[in-house]
Length: 140
Image 1: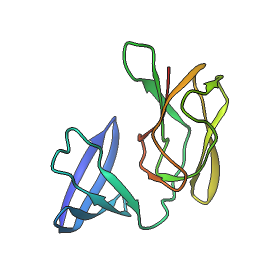
Image 2: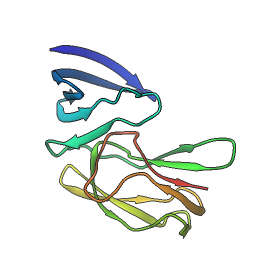
Image 3: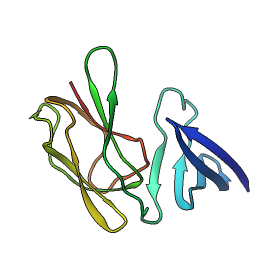
Image 4: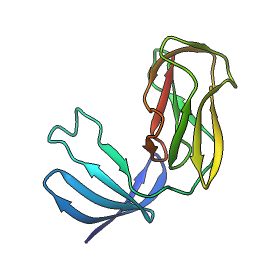
C-alpha cells in the first residue's frame, strides 16, 4: 500500500492507494474509501470518483473566482453526496439562492449561490459523490 500526504487548495489529505488494477485504483482519502478511474490523458480529463461508502463531513460552501471573466465556481465544502440539483444551465440565480443539496454526516446541507448571475455549468449530478473543493456549479 502506498501512502501520500497531499495539500490541495490549502487542505491536507492522507491518501492511501490500497489496490491498483489496470485503470482502477482503490484509494482511501482521510479514511473514506473511493474507487478512482485513471485515464491516460489525466491532464485533459477529470478523474471519475465512484462512491463506496458515504463520507461524513460537512462545512460551509466554498466559492472562488474561475477566471478574470468574472465567473464564480461554487465548490463542495467537504466530501458528501449530491441529493438534489435545483438549477440547470442557463438559469438566472441570486446570491443566497439554493442550488443543490449536499448530504454529509447524515445531514442535508443547502449549497447556495455566492453571487448573482447565470448558471454557466452544472458539474455534479444527483447521486454523485464529491470531494472537498470539487467544482459543483459555475456562475457567470
